[in-house]
Each structure stands twice: as C-alpha cells, then as structure tokens.
Image (tube, rainbow, N blue to C red; front, side):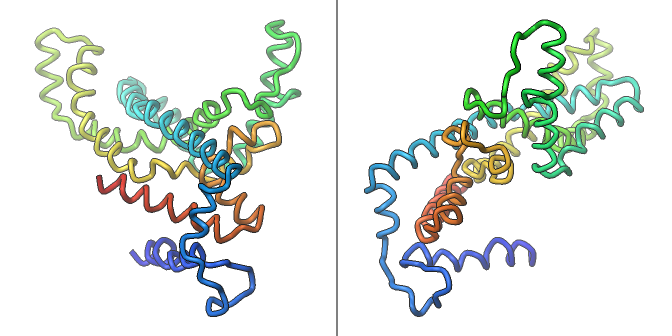
Length: 270
C-alpha cells in the first residue's frame, strides 16, 4: 500500500501542469493558469487532432489484439498440466516464464539478432531457398502492432499461466475420475471439465484488465520504434513521452495522460 501510494497517487499532483502554461524550471506559483486550453488545443488543432486519432487507433488495435489473444495463457497452462513428464513440464514452464524477467532492451537485442536483415532467421530462410532477399521485419510498418503483441505474448505467457495452473490444481479430482468411468478421453475431459472450470478465472482476469485497456505500455514500443514504423507503432503512452519529453510540450502531454487515466478509471468502474 505504501508503494502504491508513493508511486501511483503522489505523482497525481503533477496533473496541475495540464491546466497551466508549464515551463521547465519555474515554480508552481509563477505558472499561469490557463484552464482547459491544453485540452482544447488537442482537438482544435487539425494536425494534433489527426495525430491523436491515429494514436488512439493504434492503441485500440493493440488492446483489442490483447483481448483476442488473452486465452492463450490458459491453454498453455492446460498444455503444461496434461504433460506426463514432470521434468519436461518444469523445463518448458521455466523457459516460458524467464522472458518476463528480461527487460525490453534485452528483448529487442534478441529480436534484432534473429529478425534483422543479417539475422538468424533471414540467413536460415535464404540458405533454404525460401526467400531471395532478406526481410527487414523490425523496420517495416506492415503488421507492426501484431508483431509487437506477439512479442509481448511470448514474454508474458509463462507468467500468466501460473494463475491458471493454480486454478487447475483446485479442480475436484473426482470430476475427472467420474468422467473417466463414463468413458471420456483426455480431450473430452479438457473440454467439459478443465475449460469450464477455468472460465470464471479467465473472466475475472479479463474484467480486471479492462482498467488497463489503454495502458499498452511504453518500454516495448520505445525500443522498437524507428523512422519506418513510428506512425504505426506510436501508442498512447509513447505519444505522451514523445509529446512531453521529445517535443517539450509538457503541459499538453500531461493533459493527454490525465485524460487517459480518467477514461481508464471510468472503464474499470463501469
């Protein structure tokens, strides 16, 4: 609770910058109060309005992809649970959980090693004769949001499966025994017992994630952005950074971040 108060609630005092003509180095008392001017400029300026619409489109597309791919950790947990070898299960679970503890900077280095024009994947495909020239996947704007979501899915699936493994361990074993007596095979037990038993856990996690619908993250997109994919990879959190730190428009960046937090709060309470 102390951690959340210090890092989540105390910084909210910075919202005051959204209602001022903030300039770095000035005291709060010397800032001019401008009301909602920073908010109206976001929608009143044609260029900024077009940029905001594109950023919101990228953010919503990425968030919707996350919802569509959200059952994957549950199915991965079922896959682990059905493995007969405990040793293999622990090895696979460890290998899938480790990426969560690796920073996005390291993940980008790994992806660059694999997917760059001179990387492992292009070299392998060219040696096999499957492609005639290398593909620069990281520098392409095509399907960049899908590839970023898949990168995050690889990074977080192992950790997300832990919750479902705990839920599977709580399923009454007598249900499986009764199903086996009735002649149910492994797939039928998964379909009629395991998945329905995990459905409540899945929907609880889905509802809890609604509040973070617009929080698509910053670190991942910051390290993967470049001049070729910047327009399509720029989500709301990255836009706030580029607007505030990159362009020096701190007041307007605060206004965007404040609006995002209010919308996320309303989504969660609804």
